[in-house]
Image (tube, rainbow, N blue to C red):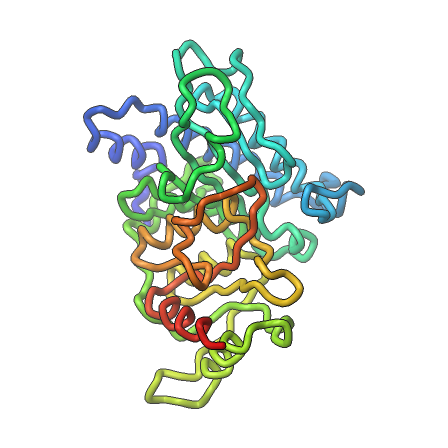
Length: 337
């Protein structure tokens, strides 16, 4: 049931009060992210009317065609984050290198303590088809002592995250976030321009009856993964099967559905892409932090996602994420030769 007068910022401040030593900087940063994503949401909803559909004619660092909305979302978030006064570095999936924040934007504080990673517009290949897309973000404390951030600040394990979340632009705009004390979701009410609390302390079911994977790559999978998916589709009522397939092809949309109802999202490595195609820092880590806070599990198939040591900004990883018992079961099959 919608708690009409619990806004995102009020909720963040209430959580902050549980920490007597909190400075309020993280709360302000989360509010800045929400504001930037309100702007992006507005443009997503009217993209076809203001010539933001289609591609720019350029490629990003991954060799992918850059959509106009990709570029708009990246620029909006970078501008909003630079002037927040709380960041020393910004890393975006659309940028080849990290962006050290100029000291003139770092406010009067002696030390801007945070760095942020974000995927500005996840699922952008679905933009022109009007399918749900989203923004994913992840926040860490810096390691360097002062000044603009460094590469070392940006290359941290997911276990060091202090906050993570995503915004999904669909039939409604929803923001889900965690600061390590549960997962909470807010729906944007366009009549008042505020994110209002809708999902409090989300818990993902331990086991599900749905899976999400691109089965068009079946012949490129490992034998263990093929057997696992075949078993999920088998007629075995005693094992709670068959499972239902639910695959949108937009990570944030597939993940959001599974978070609420239970499910397993899989993007494996295969013979064409041994490390998969999802980015550790911009997609896998923030969603892994969220799902673990909701009682779920996230794995590369052989290792906990949050424990992977990143070696570069655009490192890729296979991803198996969702209901805990389903992920554990998938890991067992993946060990098969």
